[in-house]
Amino acid sequence: MEPAGADDYSRGQPSALDDDTSSANNQSNESYPSQKNEHEAQSPSAAAAAAAASASAAAGADGEDRTAESASYLQRLLTEGHERPDGYFCTICFLPIEIPVGRHSVTNVCCMKTVCNGCDLAASQLGMYNRCPFCRTPLPHEGASFLAMVQKRVDKGDADAVHFLGDQYYQGYHGLVEDVPRAIELWTEAAELGSVEAHFNLGTTYYDGDGVEEDKPRGTHHLQQAAMRGHAESRHNLGVFAFGRGNYEIAVQHCMISAKMGHEMSLICIKAMFMKGHATKAQYAEALRGYQDAVEGMRSPQREEAKGLGI
Image 1 (tube, rainbow, N blue to C red):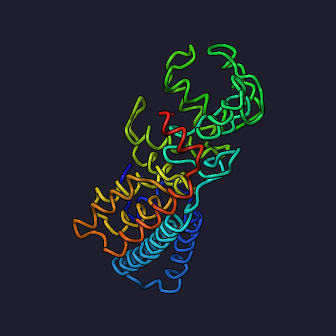
Image 2: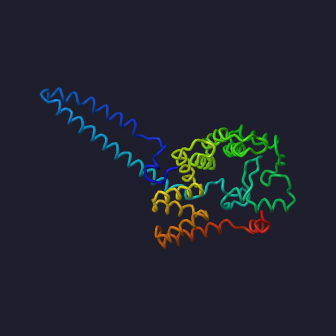
C-alpha cells in the first residue's frame, strides 16, 4: 500500500473522467479543422502553436478534475466509517466487541453469528455445552462435518461464511491444504458480497505480498473500503502508512477515528505523534477520552469474568 497522499485515495476508484476527457478531445479535433478552414492563410507554425495551446488547456482542465476527484474521495474516506459495523457487536448482549474481535469472541459456523467471550462463558455456565449459544444448533466436530456446515452457508451466499472458508484455506485448517490463491478468490467473493473483514484480509495480503505478488495500490484500495465501513484495524493501518509517508495530518485523523472505536494501538500512535510534535495536546486528549469511552462501552461483568479465567 502506498501512503495516504491524496492521489492514493483515488487509485482503484471508478472514474467519471474517462468519457468526459474523450469527449473533450473529440471536440478539440473536430473544431480545429473548421478554424483552419476559416483562416486558410494560417501558417503551419501558427497552427501547431494553436494545437499545443488547446492540448495544454485540455490537460490542465483534466488535471483539475482529477485533483477535485481525489480531494472528494479523501473527504469521503475521512468522514465515513466512524461507527463499527453490525458484525462487530455480540448477537446476544448487543455490546460492541473488543478489538481484535477474533480474540474476544467466537463465531459458530452453524449460523455465522458472533458471540462475545462473556456470553459464551455464560452459556457454558448454564449447561449449554457443544451447542451454539445463539441458535442452539449442536456444534460440529472438526474436519468434514465442520466444513460441510460452512459450505452450507457458503452455498446460500453468506458473505461471512465465504470469508470464513477463505480463512480456512489460507491457514490450512480443518484438513484443508493451504491454498492462498483459493483464499484470495473466496475473500474477493466475500468482499463483493459485503464482508468488511474480507476487504481487510485482501488489503493486508496484497500490501505485504503475503503469498501473492505484492500490489500496494490494490491493498490500499481494499483497506480504504474496509475503513469506510467502520473497520478499525484497516483505519489504523492507513494512519500508519500516512505517517510513514510524512503525511502527519492525515495520519492523526485516521488514528483519531480508530482510537475512538477502542483501538489501543491507534491511541499509542497518537501519543507518539504528540510527543514528536505531529499531533496537538488537544488531539491526544480527545483521542484518549474517545478511547476510554469506547472501552467502557465494551465492558460487562461476564466479559470481565471471562478475562479473569484467561478466556
